[in-house]
Length: 424
Image 1 (cartoon, rainbow, N blue to C red):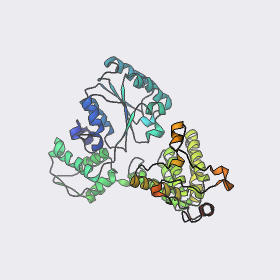
Image 2: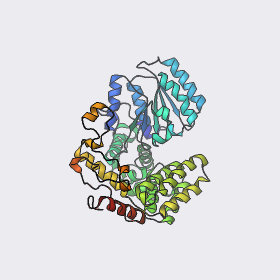
Image 3: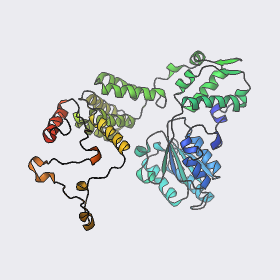
Image 4: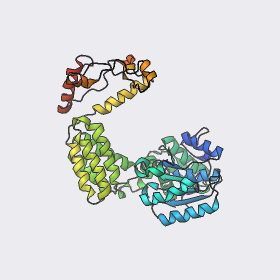
């Protein structure tokens, strides 16, 4: 049997589709689109092996539309134009039966390739469905992204993956014909890293290597799968484990650990932009105002590696990682916005105090908008004590400066201004 198990039991309709109930449940967004017969261009964003391609096929099948597919890895601008010309001939403009053009790994398309899609999407020649494992905000050009709705597919839960194994036991004629008992699933789930395709492939490999009766145990799975042949899987569990070790090394001010894990990712073929983005986030979350220059360097690093590329980018990434690791740390800004958001969720939409409101019209002035506001620059030291929070939460201290030399300066500055109001 040449067709892989994952392909043999691929769901053919929304009813059989496991997980993503926020999209394909009875009231899910995609379910409603299909029922109404109006499918917008969309981007499916989620980890590998989560069912993006399957979902695109189901949308086309249940909406009874012509379906064309391209892989961004092997297709160029000419391939895109050829498919668009075919799609134009098979469907009418702005009808419910516009052909669907599915592009797998759309984040790998260059700007010119993505530009070649714009006209067809805008004019309604095709309904685009793109699949990506990367954040489309970074990887899809703004003009194309603005014409698409982005739907996030969540990682499979343990229950979802175990349900996939149960489906294989019941739905696949080859597997169902064998005497199989699944006694343990931990090794299968761990090695697959949440990738359904990989899970089913490993399961089939183990089954094919054993004589009946077959009892699936962790020891059996580990004995059949040579994990040590893969040093770094940039789409699997190690992808997340190693980036976690990298970030925690920097947060823990250890440049040695940071550069080691950076090297592991580089040797494993990790995307340089992914590494740079994570350092950009860390520069604000874990260093913040203890050293504001860290954010500038991290942002410049991201810009630089997008134009340089490997192998030279490794030097730039290394410089940034070492700088961030050896920088003073503060998560005060991170904590402040988290606390502020919690207050907003708890208190709702509190009214803006009248003295802080804008008063561009005569009526607003008559309603006392902006009355009693004191312009700070009109006072000594460019400061005047006044309230900037809604009355219900007045005097609430949200920002607590970190314990480092730079933010100690902030603390003393605020204490001198506000005296005992906020308790700095």
